[in-house]
Every structure is written in structure tokens, then in C-alpha cells.
Length: 465
Image (cartoon, rainbow, N blue to C red; front, side, top):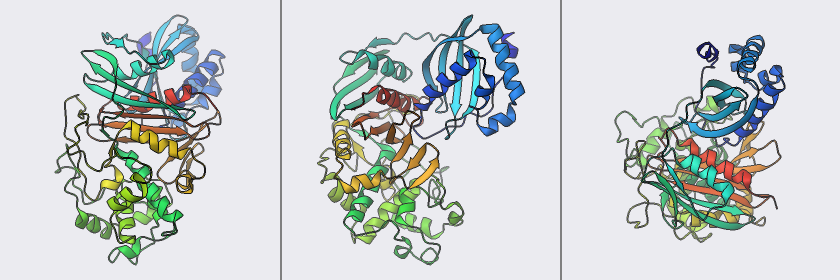
């Protein structure tokens, strides 16, 4: 009986890099409500178009009717984990038993995967030793962290109405406990792109550049006289440039420290040999290479370097004394872990630095977050203005992604991942709330999505002004 029931599977769980994970709660609650009411057509309309093509309305009705006859209505759903960076799994209690309900969402927050299977209780001996945290946050944090290997460490800042609380979390000896680590350092990965975009906004605010200015004059032929690429399209990922330079051979580089030997001459060669990028222009296509070119070109435009501009216009201006451009020599650096939980190399960057090279603390990032709440700061406000529509509820400004919830809340956010670290910074500007999480969870970990899931769950718990 069960085996035939669980042949209903759609198909493809698409790994989704945007931090829209808080949308899963809305999707699950909507599914539960429609399913319990027997409104299977409403469930069908929650599906993405490709899923509807695979699973017709009649097949959906047949499956859900069979499910309800066999197991009854849904009583409760409880998030258990975010699996393989792709889908959220919920322990779902029906009238006649407990099943695992696994859901994947596309960028329009439509279901593109729904998989129901018998629920297997994990034999998890992990001990919850969290103290000094509010009760409503303990369960969210513990359920996310227990899936990580021993020696996992998280540094968390909870900003509520501009007031900051810091929490450190460590999993060791199969226990999850608290520690003080607000001044410990982690690689922040692609959150660096927000800082790179902030440099651009500062230059624009001082009228040293315009967003529409082309970068072409700073390079050689044939790119120099080719289709114009603006600073804006690099900052909002609509230039059409590839995710990584085409002249990086991922098969031969050192995977534990992949970008240390990619130098200025390589970037120039990579730009000069770009082909077909204009075909994707004005479409969102996330690009680490584009961020690197943005930083490099801003330096050239000001007869300086990106690192000098970053230090002067952002790190010094906002008092970020513990945000560094290299992990070398930092005594308070938390060791990064690989996907198996073993210590791994830090990543070193040369010219690709603007896409992901910063090392920081939650204390410093909280200072940067509080600056975002000041309405008179024109440069920071500029970074948060939507410049491109990705979907009905997802936009991008300069560096920041912008999510608009059905509740009306708007979040600006960016996440990051390197070989030994995963991070999230998400802010509710209107209510002056935010969550910052730095961790030594590998960006290659199958459970790295738990960081985003946890962060947005915590952010959703914070009060409005």
C-alpha cells in the first residue's frame, strides 16, 4: 500500500541559491489548509508550470484523495531539515500516522517538487545544551545545528529594533551549546558583494561615477568597442557574464583554495575573450566574475585599486576595524570545515576578491547593518533600491537581493559560501530588525541550506516597530 502511494514524486529538486527559505513555511501551511479542505485544485495551483505538466489536475486529485483516505487529514507539520541544499523536509502528523513531507520551491515560490514518504525518526543523540537564548529561538537553532558535524561553530547577531544580541553556538561531543564568539572571524563569502556594491554607491553619491557608465573603455579590443556593459549591470548580475571566468579550469585547480592564482592578467584575458555575453543581457544571471570585474574596474576608474577604495569608502567610513581582506595572521579565526567536517584550507583571493574575499565578525557586520537603518545615508539607500525584477516577489538592488513577503514585509539579504564557511545577512529595514549568521559550515555541505532556513525563521520571529 505505502509503496504504491509514494510513487508520486515529482522529479527535480532544483538547488536554489536565493535565501527564500522562509517561503517554505507559507507553502506548507497553504498546502495543509487546501488539503484538509479537500480543495485539491487549490493545491494544483501551488505547483509550478513544469510540475503541472508532469502531474495533471486529475492525477493530483487522485493522489491526494488516496492520501486522505489512507492517512486522514494533516494535524501538524514540523520542519526537520533542509536537505542537500534543495528541499525542506517536514515531519507531518496525519490522523492515521506520521509521514515525511518534502517540498522544493522555484524562484516564484511555486512547488516544483513534492515527495511524501514514511517518516523515519532519526536516532539522534545530540544533546541540546543551549543556554542564554530565548526559548522561542532555541528550537530553531538546535534543529538546524544538530545536522552539522562536531566542531561546527556559529556566530549569530539578532538585531531587534536596532538592539543587538549576540549568540555563539558550538556543536562538540554531540552536544549543541553556547559560547562567546562575537569577535571571532569567519570568511563571509559572497556577502562581500554587498560591500563591493557599496563602494560603487559611494562613488556614485560623490558623482565620481554614474551607474550607467560603461566599463568598456578600461579594457582592450575587442571588448573595448563591443556592446556596452555598465557598472549597474555588473552590480545587479544582468551583464550576462558567466558565473566564473571561462579561463578557470575547475578540473585542474586546487579545489581547497581555488582562486589564489587567478591574477590581473587572467582577468583581462577573461574579459577580452568573452563571447556571447550580450545574449543574456538584462536577464539575471548570478556572476562572481562580474563582481570581480566591477571591483577591478572601479579601481581603474579612480586611478587606485579596489582594495584601497574598499578600505577608504566603506571599512574606514563605517568603523569596521575587524573586517579584513585576508585570513592570514588572524588569531581569532575560526577554522573552516569541509563537507565532511574536517578542517580545510582558507580561500585566498587576488583579482577575484570583490566577489567573495572578506573575513569579518558578527560584531562588525552588525555595525554595518545598523548603518543601513539610517535614512539619511544616501549611498547605502541607493544599494537597496530595486534595479531589476527577478520574479514577482524577488528583486535585486546593488548587491542586495530584495524579497517581498505576502505579509508585506520586505527583506534585503545576501548569503555566502566558501569551502569552509557559510554565511547569511538579512535585514528588515522598515522595522530595524536583522539576522547575521557566520559559520564554519562548508559551502559544499549537503546541509548548508540550514543556515538560510534558520536565519529567516529567526528573522520572522522578530517584532515589528
